[in-house]
Image 1 (cartoon, rainbow, N blue to C red):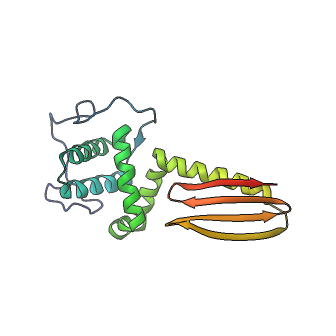
Image 2: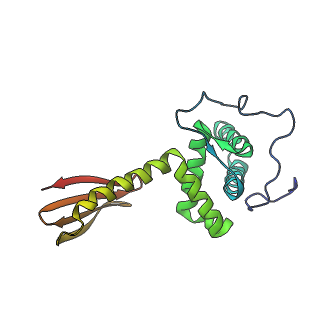
Length: 186
């Protein structure tokens, strides 16, 4: 790796910290320990996180946002994010995954590394848990004759899926916050 490496290219991330520069305890805006456990970053996941944070940092002019991104860059360089840095990484990964930027820049491997990291972060873990909960509820319909299915758009990017089987009615809401069971009828 060299200091002149282009930002945003996996495998070509410039050094971020020299001797005597801020560590995790002295970063601008450093916060007390988060109740969520730290998330380790290594390999391609670390490269993608660093490159994305550096790319956004290069474009942002707001000093508070820049400080937050600098903290994320430092934490990612150390190989672990927690608290505010984890929240900042969630935001970057969500945007990059939703827009297709991560796949376009880093290929399928980079996208998969970002997805695996996202699922370890608090919001990603919440989405996975909500999907598991809905799957468990839908399991009540297994083996029962299907009586009705409908999908309704309830807003931009938000839908409800209603299923009726053997006298049981379940309605699932699907939106950016995940999948949630919104009603159960017997």
